[in-house]
Length: 276
Image (cartoon, rainbow, N blue to C red; front, top):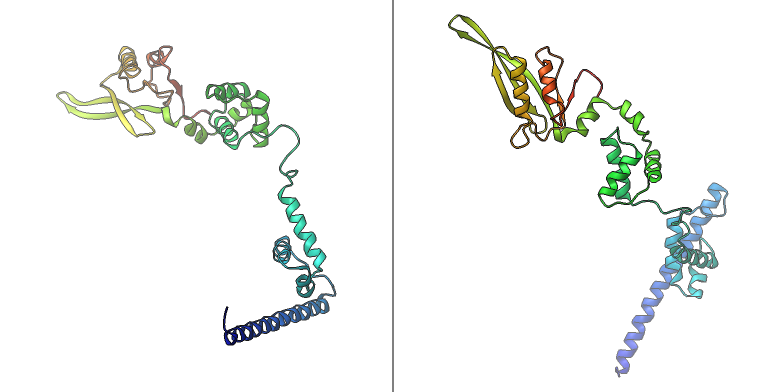
C-alpha cells in the first residue's frame, strides 16, 4: 500500500495527463468539424469521399473504441457506419465467391507456361503432339485444354504458326542442335604455279566450335560422300547430335553430299535463303 502522499501525487499526475489528452482529443474533434465544414463549403457536398483503404483504416481503428468513445470521436461518419464497414471487412475475409469461378479450375500456371513454350518452340506441333509430349513428362492434360490455352494466349493452330515462323524463331527453336557448313578456298604456290585448295568445315552455332571436315584440291562425289559419313558417325562424328544443318546452294554441294546425309543421317538440310 502506497503512502497517502504518494497516492495523492499519482492521482494528481493521472488527472493532469487525462486533462491533457482530453484537450488534445477535443482539439482534434474540433479540427475535423472545421475541415468538414470547409470541404462542404468548397464542394457543396455534405459527404467526404473516401477510398476503400481509408474506410478500412477507419473501421479498424473505430472498432477498438467503446460505443461512448465512438459517439464522441467520430466526426466524418456516423458510429454505425464505422461498425458497418468493419463487419463488411470481416465478411469479405471469409467470402470466397470472388475466388471461385464457374466451370473447371484452371490449369496450374507452370503447366500453362510449359504448353505455351512448347507451342512457340515447335510451331509444327499440333494439339495432339503437344498433349503427348506433356504425357511423356507425366502431365495429364486434354487436347481440348491445350487448344484453349493456346487460344487464350493468342497462338494460332500448328499450320498457321508454322507458316508464319520467322528465321529468328527457327534459330531459337533448334539452337541446341543447329550446325552450319561451307567451303572456303586457300591458294598456295606449288611447283607448277598456284594451287587452290578447298577446305570443308562445319560449325556448331551454339558453342562456335569449328571442325575441319576435309581439305582437297578437287573434291569429288566419292570424297564428299565419305566426309558426310565421317561427320555423322554415331560414336565420334561431329554431327552425331545435330538435327538441322544449314548450307547454301553452292554447286560444290554435289548429289553425293545430299546422298551422304540421307537416309542414314538424322540431320535435315536447310537453305537459309528459303523460309524455314
